[in-house]
Structure formats: C-alpha cells, structure tokens
Length: 451
Image (cartoon, rainbow, N blue to C red):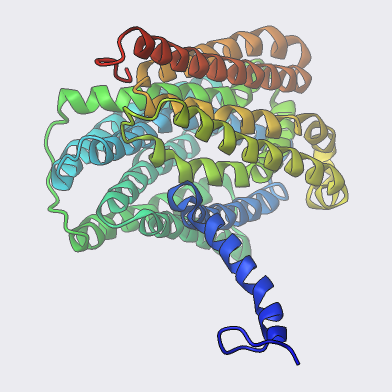
C-alpha cells in the first residue's frame, strides 16, 4: 500500500509534485527582474494591439496609395519621429526620473513637464511643417494634419500616460496608451468601410479624436489620479533633464527612421515606399524586444551606489534573453515568408526581398538596447546620450554615403552598420565605466562611490 504524506496518498503526491514545480517555476519567472514579467505582459498587450492597428492601416493604405505616395508618407514620419523624442519621449522619461530617483511631488512634475511638452510640441510642429513642405511630396494640408496629430496631440497623450504611471502604476499607463491605439483603429476602419480612406482624411480623423482624448485626460483622468492641473512657463531644469533623455531618443529615432527621409530627399520615392513597407514588417517582428525593453526601462532609473558588478550581470543576463528572442524572431520571420508575400500587394513585391536583408536588424537591436540603459544605473546619463548621438552621426554619414547611389540597398547596409556600431559603443562604454568604478573602489575603498 502506498505510504501517505501529509494526509495524501503517495500516488497523489507524485501527481501534485510536478504541478507544484511548474507553479514555483512560473512564480520565479513572474517575479524575476523585480516583477518585469507582469509589466512585460501589459507592455506586450499594448504593443500587440498597436501592431494590429498599424498592420490594419498598412494593409488598407497600400491598396489605395501608389508606392511613391506611401514612400512620401513614411518620409514625413522620418521627420516627425525624431522630433517626437523631443516632445514626449524626453519629457516622459525625465518625469519618471524625477519621481523614481529624486522623489519630486507629482503635481509639481505635471506642471513642469506638461508645459514643456506643449511648448516644445508647438515649436517642433512649426519646424516639421517647414521641412516637410520643402522635401516631402505631400499636400500642405496633409503635412500639417499629420504633424499636429503626432507632435501635439499624441505627445500630450503619451506624457499624460507617464504621469499616470507615477501616480498609479505601469499597467494604468499602458491602458491610457491603449486608448489612443483604439482611436487610431476606429479612424482607419471607419474610413476604409466608408470608402474615404486617404492620408488627409486619416490624419484629420486622428487630430479630432486625439484632441477629444486629450481633453478627457486633462479634465477627468489626471484629476482622478490625484493631480491638480496647472500650467506655467517650463522651468530651465525641466528642459535640461528632458534634454538628457531626448538627445539619445532623437538620435536613436533618426537612426531608425532617417533613412526613409533621406530616400525621399534624394528622389528615391518609390524605393522609400518599398523600404518603408519592409521596415514596417521588421518593426512588427521587433515588437517583443521593444516590449521587454520598455517594461525594464524604469528599473534602471533609481541610483544603485552599491550595485557594482550586479548591474553589469543584470544587463548581461537580460541582453542574453533578448538576443535569443531576437534571433528566434528573425528565424520565424524568415520561415513566415509565404505569409509576408500574402500581406503585400503586387506593387510592393520588392519589399519582400528587403525584408530578408533586414532580418539581421532584430538580433542587433536586441544586443544594443539594454546596455545603454545600464549606464543609467551608474549615473552615466550624459555618456549614454553621447553613445546615441555618436551612433546617429555614424548613421547619417552612412545614409549620405550609401543611399544616393544605391537606393534601398544603401539604406539597408547603412541601417545594419549603424546598429552594429551602437552595439559596440554601448557595450564598450558600459564595461569601461564599470571598470572605472572598480578601480576607484580599489584605490579608495572607504570613500569610493558609483559615479
């Protein structure tokens, strides 16, 4: 007869054992990296939802736009995306730092950074419209509507989402961003069903829907989270702290999107459309990498004076996970070529070839995203900005050297080489400064602190 254990027959224990082991394993995964799995789930839900909306827009627009018009559309986003780093990415990350590292009161953070976003958004919009009118083959109305929807309305929404994050939590922030995606999906599907889908109508719908959403966030959602809405002239220190994050984000964004703008500037508009369609697919494939990186970011913001090699080990472990993920995603997309062929209409046939070359972008991105954030934990924000800025300079030089004579082939080569440089610069900087910290502790163990 089987021997009982804790009141259970032995055969029951044998059955329950594996279940408990799986539960323990899942619990360890869920709580790893300070609860990263839960935040990753929410970030993944948002990005999956956003990817669906983007794919719906892509599939519908490619059926009503020739590749030159679609290339011009992507070219304008080559201007808008880097400027978005100034209007919402930089202020959004800076206000997280003010909360997590410096414990600044949340209403004071709102007053400073919401004002900053509106101010910089207005200036950036004027600049983007001017550049777009010179280089992009879209109508003035289309350019103005796209710029306003992205650099004013979307920027305000995303900064409000970050404010919700520090007042509530990461999932609440994600739900605010998912609301914006819902509005985008409503606009695309409604216009397509009505037979009125075009760049102008889509951008106009974005402006109207996003403006109402901004009004709800400022009038209802933020006060419900405990904020008192007030505006003033943005203080100088808000500009400075935002610039520390905005500069690398601008550089990174231009490295990712600047090639579409350069293709348009050198009259490779059809190539820009083909390349833009291919890059859209690659970015969808990169979504899981972005999800983990986004969920992990704020964990590198608190100062860690006693971290030492622990920070480097954390960066290494997380990068290893992302690299395996990136390599797996590249293989998956390669095997999914029949599905990609089905998604692209005949006019975008060349994009299928471009996708194959851009697959290397995925593992390279996975290698470079975490070490730059590791510099934050040891207080090297300026050095982090310098890494991104130098990488952007390298990418611009490569774009100007390779794109004019080679079109999309030059854009692919420049993109991959620039990503490779970023990986080398990020890891080189992180290892150098960790060794510098280790030397300072050896020379002065009683007073050395992480710089």
